[in-house]
Image (cartoon, rainbow, N blue to C red):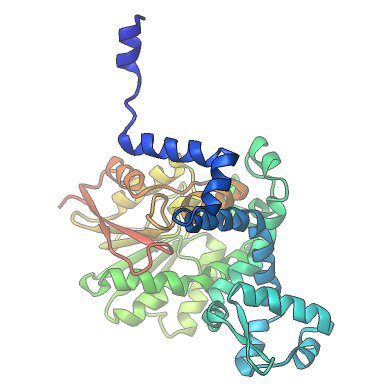
Length: 383
């Protein structure tokens, strides 16, 4: 290849990339960093970068402070009344010295705050934990993720699976997910149900369900999402499809909520089995990203086959490439799903491409209040 041909074949570097490369090249020079830290106009940027880098180094400690507060019920205790260190220590079964150290660390993270009289009370972020069982459940659950990430290089190098998380999500490595016994799925079903209200609120704010006659929630767990939908759309018939043991729990939950007559529950394996027909809307909430591309595409095709002409698919989950939520989409879910043993975070473009490949004639993004938590895609089957 001639020099001219090689030049023509080389990828063109955009102006944005050139500026970014120049900026990072300068930041990599110790002399420039020292100058930037002293110069008044660049000092704020240098300090922010130093803080961001330190937060990356110390992030594990921050999460463990949060974990300790959740495990010790600090937020629930301080929600009852502010307490001094001496009065709080016995409630936590800690020494006063350990209590003061934990509270000071939590205050630095805005989880707690110290009043002028010395008593500890809730901080801004700690107050947000009150009544938010989903976040508390996820914090407790992350103990397994921390164990899996103790040696992240080893996890990256070995075949997927074989971790605490992949064992917890029993269906993840099972050859026949439908045969997984009830005791293996009870904990993760409860975890998903605890965190479902946050997601349901996002989806219900983005889409009106009362325009449909019957909805089928695929991978719907114990029915937490459908129970939230049922309250918003009282004339909507409900259908749920999940593993047989999960379906049995959903059936009991619907009956206890007085929804037994409205809800039809089906047990099966959506990675292999045909889905029950009859719904004009299928919902797929926090399901697709848990599965590799081949399984995900197969599921989308089964959904397309189950829908009538003109039927709709509503897919909701956190997505990669979400502006302002890149650490959540690419870093957190990327490594969580790696430890889980299957699945990957996908961008809206990737998801919509898969939807089109599955046979849907059109799709569009819906606006959700908190894209960091959930984004949504609505797709249609040709009429």
